Length: 157
Image (cartoon, rainbow, N blue to C red; front, side):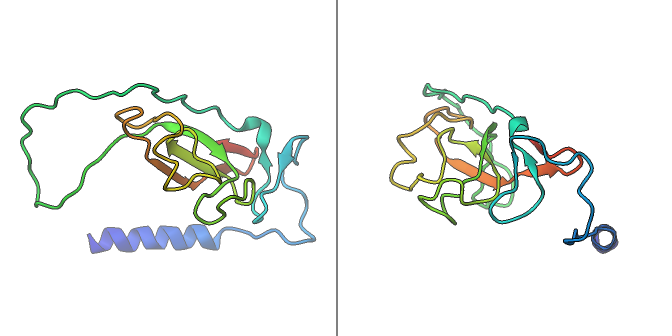
């Protein structure tokens, strides 16, 4: 396992070492920005906003069924897994920039379909549909920085 971890670190360091950081004198990237493209407020690659994918609409119903007897296995650690579909992308972050729509870099959202800069612990239970198991019974929300194909500016979902 240590050898595998060392290999992963070596590969990561090699990838980082081969990256270049554009400077003011660098030429424009291949596939220069088109109308509708933007650079997020925090900087980063240009993004073709017209290519932001449409996510799932989520379940508007309460999807729950009896589980019956469940055989538990494992080490006794309290954990569970719920699968959540892609909901949407937005330049919002309800924790870092609450109440400030568009003030963040592009994020990919999963779970609650109404998550945005104005989402709070108080309103998340009553807004949006759910793309996680359970539909509206599971309106939890998750977000991560979006991946961008830097050769095209297209966000990857």
